Structures are given as structure tokens and as C-alpha cells.
Length: 400
Image 1 (cartoon, rainbow, N blue to C red):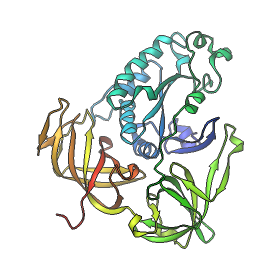
Image 2: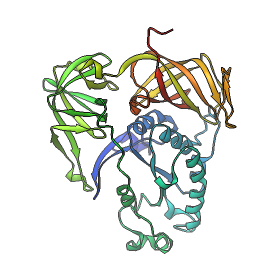
Image 3: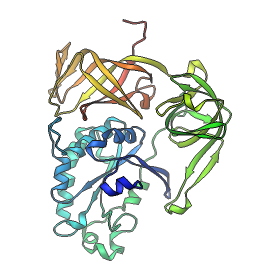
Image 4: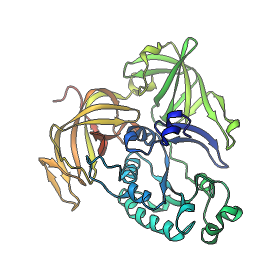
């Protein structure tokens, strides 16, 4: 998945790579998001548009512990990334998860069942704590380097005799194929998030995902927040298989919620369109609100070192965007003990709270119940994730 030369040289994923494959049950778009602490914003972008997730953890002694052991936010130690990614993934809407336990062939002894169970026993309580239903979480031992248990079962691979003795579960590809299809809000107003764009002829090709609703060739759409109207001239969807050389584009007349597509727009100047724009129906009554202030419920990370107070400033990440934001007011907080306090002065780690947020600029916003993709966000400060949140209501600009 890491096709960029700088990524291969450094041995880390820097940007999101996209591939399309077909399994017996599903057409799947895979987003390979970075795991390194320096590239968490890209991971947030990937998780924010995903239905399900594959969490790849190293079983090598020391590597798993480095990724999972908690560290103090602000300490600049590259530990705890697995914890942060689990919290972010669940907070951004991922409800089904495969934990791919990688490098198990390099354990002592090779393909150690004990090491696999140790990792599983440490991750399960934290996954449950973050709201994952364990009936929707699968643990799969693999070797990414040799390909063991990726597509072929261990008992058919000479390199995995030890694994075949105790593991009778699914291959990674079988586990992916067993994901339950996400529920689509097809009946809701059309929403499309632009992740990339380029000029093509006299029109503009925009890439992204239909997060809800339906779009058809010939539809009049609005590019928000600018409000310009364009016409959908063509819709393409990447079609692929497990063979890399069979990936192509399929011309479509209609696209539904959940599909990653390319839309060819005419009647719009490319200079007026940017990544992060929302495309909606042109009808004014069907467009999302464009505002700066909202009421939200936030869940604060356990290990923050600086409490949140009124006036605290953050970088708010929402789908492909990040904008400065300020906590205007704190209405209540609930600690780990379940006790709710009204009008607290501070919010400490591990608490949930109801707050008023103000953005530095107007964005397309909706409540989480109306549109999940435009109603959930992440707050970060100084390169650390501070909280995940959902929008509960919007504050009209006429309101004080």
C-alpha cells in the first residue's frame, strides 16, 4: 500500500493510500491510514469515512508494549498509539474491527499461542471500555511479510505448521468478507465529502464518499460552504478484485450512501472548489447548516496533562478538515464515578462533558443524529489527541 518513495525509505505510512478489491460478498475500498504519532490527522481522516477497521498490531516483544502502554500526553514519547487509534476509531464511528496480530511468526517460540492470547487478553478490556461490542471484534494471527493466514489457511502453508496446530479460525481475507454491511441512510438528504479533485476538460472531477442519500447523473448540486451550483455529468466507481491488474472504473447513473466515487461536475470553476467541501442537493431546504457555533458532548482522553477550561483552544478535525476551535462554555461534566457536576471550572482526563464550541470559520455542520459524518469531530492540541465529540445541537448566529 505504501507506494510513495519517501514512505518506503522511511518505512512508515505518511498519507492515506486507497485500493479497491472484491471479495465473494463485498466490493471493498481499503484505506491504509498512518499509524505513526506524527501523522494522526491523516489517520483521523481515514477513520472518519470508514465503516469498519483493521487494527494491525505487532506481536514482537516490546513493539506491542510500546504501542499499547499508556503515555502522558505532551511527553513526546512514541508510545500509546494503539490506545489512541482504538479511541479515535470508535469515536469516529467504526463499530466492527479486526485485530490483525502481525509478526507472530517472529515470536518465541514461532507462532506462539501464548503470545497471541496475551495480546488478546490485554486489548479486549480496552476495546470494551471504548464501546466496542466484542461480538463484532475478531482477532486474526498473521504474518504480513510471508503472507501466512492472509489468504491461505495455515494448514495449507508449509511456513505455518505451528500455527495450524492451534488456530482453526478465519484467514484475514475471510474475516474481511464476514463484516456485516453498514446501515445506509439512503433516505436522508444527499451529502458527499470531497477528498480530492482535478480539472478534466471543461469540468471538475471530484473524488470522495457519499456519506448519505443518493446522487444521479443530471442532478443539480451545491458545493458548500460557497453555495455554487453545478451539474452532475458523470459518476465513476472504482471496481476491483483481489488481482491488482483487474482494477478499473465503472460508469454509473446513480450512487448510494456508502459508495466511494468520482463525480464529474460541469458549470463550476475549479478555483471555487477545495478538499473538505460538502456537495449537497441544490435545493436550499436540503442543504446542511453553515455555522460556527454548536453544543457538543465530548469524551476526554484519560491521560491529558492540561485540563480543559473555558477559553481552551484546540484544532478541531472533522472528516478531511481541521480548523481552530475554542471552548466557549462548559455546561456540565461527568467523571469516571458517574457523578454529574453542573457548570464546572475544569474538565479533567477520563471525563465526559457538555460544552459550547466556536470555530474560527463557518463549516457545514449537522447534529450527529442528522448526519454522523458532519456531526462528529476530534479535538487535538500540540500534536496530541485531547477529546472526541459529537454535535448535539447548532447555535443559530442570531442566538447569543
